[in-house]
Image (cartoon, rainbow, N blue to C red; front, side):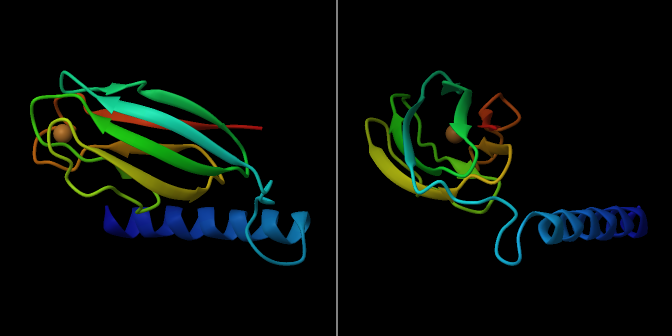
Length: 125
Ligand SMILES: [Cu+2]
């Protein structure tokens, strides 16, 4: 299992490296646009609203996270960026960075993701 995953990851990295070389001489595989997309995501009823956001590929994403639920929540992105745990009624702004592909987000509070607190950033090309 572990060996298979490692092999797949190595293959994916090799493929990405190949694309990077084909695209440009250095740096990330996506050329940053220099633009910033700011989106408000609200936590309410053990879910995110909206649960899917579309961001132009290469834009920097800034998320205004609002917790309109009665419980403590956070928002954690697939690239490692995350909010603090935000109390009911609280807000936090997260600089997610340049969007270089589709990316999941979820709540890291125990059990919340399994109850539906997840969503996806769709990189629009
Ligand atoms: Cu939560």
